[in-house]
Length: 273
Ligand SMILES: NC(=O)c1ccc[n+]([C@@H]2O[C@H](COP(=O)([O-])OP(=O)(O)OC[C@H]3O[C@@H](n4cnc5c(N)ncnc54)[C@H](O)[C@@H]3O)[C@@H](O)[C@H]2O)c1
Image (cartoon, rainbow, N blue to C red):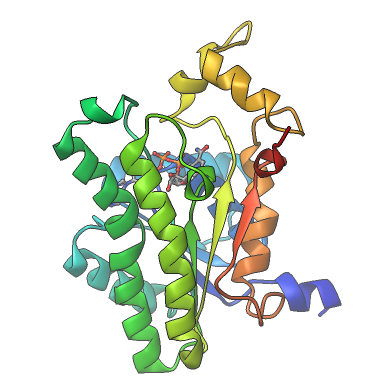
């Protein structure tokens, strides 16, 4: 085994990615598969998981049996427990939990915020997107003595709230806060907890907020402001996330790294006058 393989090979390791039908999850899954992992994608809709599986297989060669899908609502503890059991039996006990559930719906002035919608977004990003899956996985890991690790997805809005997306801001700042707190609590079990904060990647949810027209490309006012404040002057390419993820989830390369967030943002957070 080469030095690089000893740091970054995921051969023989099992990774669970929630929100598996999502855009980010698909590219991150691809990175883990390319590094030799077995990957299980979890999501609510078996159709979108099947579509995600096909997309991945159209982009890279996936070894037989290395990619698994499981229908689970991450807000439902019994679904998560059933998923853990199935993955342990079919692929081997998972050692990485990548929490990929989350997202935003719309944008409004604070006083126009619908409270039901606020609660939905908060719960999706914080409870389904982090708390409940982490509870299920870390209980199992502690019981079995597995030194697993969790990677949460925070956001630019964890650092400084973005305008008009109140519940998303509240949830993502909490994701970062709880990443730090839980890393402290689980360190004694050898379990690490970190997060990444993707900058601006054009996905399903934010496409219309950023792009007014695809061809020829016309940005919205918000999209232009973001690029003006991104020193690398572009939106993220989803493949940009793979390196940070493979580093943080490697128990060799990141053996002594816990409770941190790695922004992958083209320098957006450095913006200043
Ligand atoms: N796209 C970006 O630019 C960007 C930037 C920063 C952070 N993020 C974060 O990255 C994560 C993934 O974002 P994305 O752009 O890929 O979004 P996406 O909407 O493409 O993926 C999210 C997936 O989660 C699934 N999901 C929602 N609730 C669920 C539940 N209860 N159980 C199971 N699955 C559920 C959705 O069906 C969807 O497939 C989110 O946390 C998002 O906030 C994205």
